[in-house]
Length: 451
Ligand SMILES: *[C@@H]1O[C@H](CO)[C@@H](O)[C@H](O)[C@H]1NC(C)=O
Ligand SMILES: *[C@@H]1O[C@H](CO)[C@@H](O)[C@H](O)[C@H]1NC(C)=O
Ligand SMILES: *[C@@H]1O[C@H](CO)[C@@H](O)[C@H](O)[C@H]1NC(C)=O
Ligand SMILES: *[C@@H]1O[C@H](CO)[C@@H](O)[C@H](O)[C@H]1NC(C)=O
Ligand SMILES: *[C@@H]1O[C@H](CO)[C@@H](O)[C@H](O)[C@H]1NC(C)=O
Ligand SMILES: [Zn+2]
Image (cartoon, rainbow, N blue to C red):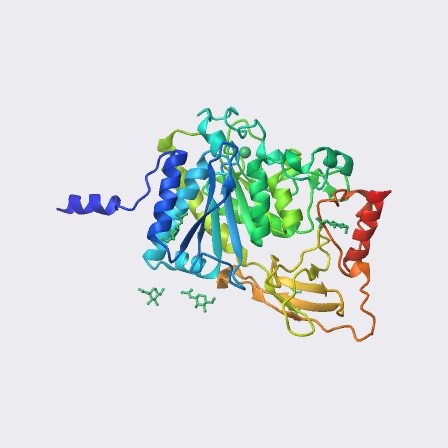
């Protein structure tokens, strides 16, 4: 009797098996989860792979179907290299875990789903997965069906304008285009991209053009303190990643983290694109020494990574969030919200809901908000540690219309940043650049390009 009870206890009917799921099985699983949990899940496709497979994303939240003001959007992307398969199964286990936790009213799940919207793309490269070799280090299946490495196929801010024009938009692979379009439909705040073949949390930049971002062999972002913190949250919550020397034939990583460029320079990567162009802070997580380990290692790999995956998602609540309202009290899109001392290559802007999210470690920060026809607004905010409360600090900015009669707004009031502005870093981004001169300097950068 007691052994029967134990058996039932250990293998509840809903438990997802630890094994590799084919693309079709994965799709069936996601459809089933979506169908049986309409209150907290929303399954959608962001496009198709080269061979026409749907790129399914499962969104989990108490309001899963659309964005809610003040609820940050988070994402995990796995298996962009088709033969790096552990992340893909971790994502299915994570879905299973979150749904079950929510159904059991466990606070770690209910609080996450109540306070954020989590999007999971278990495979970005289903075609590569289908032809993947099970070798630990080999590359068979890494690329998409057109033999392109998807983590080298994004627009790269550090590649010169001329070279960038040669790599015209048509050269973007279907899977990359799908992710780029996805980034336009949701304002993601925090993200991670799961890989295998090493055990390290890797943070931007992955590339550099030798400009002022290059410091001591690393390509350093203006948000380096936040990135190092985020990477440590993953590595220190992981069973062994923080040791930094677990995999054979790998260089040791202090604290189990590394700047991407310092490890090896990489053009066209997804994490730099997310950060520079979509103001989404993304890490590249290498979650297993072996790219395609035997299936019987999956339970241990899940146990090793579970706490990290959950802790990392909570970090979406770092810093400050809020809306920017114009002189008549309407939330405005494209207001520039800058933090002094953080000269982002593309200034962070409010989205179509008039919202901004700014991940910051606890401390005092000086904010500057710029919007055409309105006075520049500055404020110093004392930012607490949000993850413990499952909410970033809330702060709205109420702008005042410029009293003068002219409608003309100086060009530097709203610096632009788009794909025609590629030559960043380098001499135009000097270390003496002051936070308040960001707009002017972007104009200067644009001018440099036209010379
Ligand atoms: C997900 O489930 C909902 C509710 O049952 C359903 O309306 C929707 O069509 C499902 N989505 C997919 C992609 O099957
Ligand atoms: C869920 O748990 C919370 C405490 O964490 C409790 O207040 C609430 O009543 C529980 N809800 C249900 C339906 O059990
Ligand atoms: C859900 O979030 C709201 C704020 O968005 C909060 O007031 C409420 O207490 C939260 N409920 C749970 C169960 O965490
Ligand atoms: C931030 O400013 C407040 C006063 O507004 C001060 O009490 C506090 O010590 C400051 N914190 C830091 C980390 O500088
Ligand atoms: C990019 O910026 C330039 C210069 O501000 C502008 O002329 C162009 O229309 C912008 N393109 C897009 C796609 O936003
Ligand atoms: Zn990889």
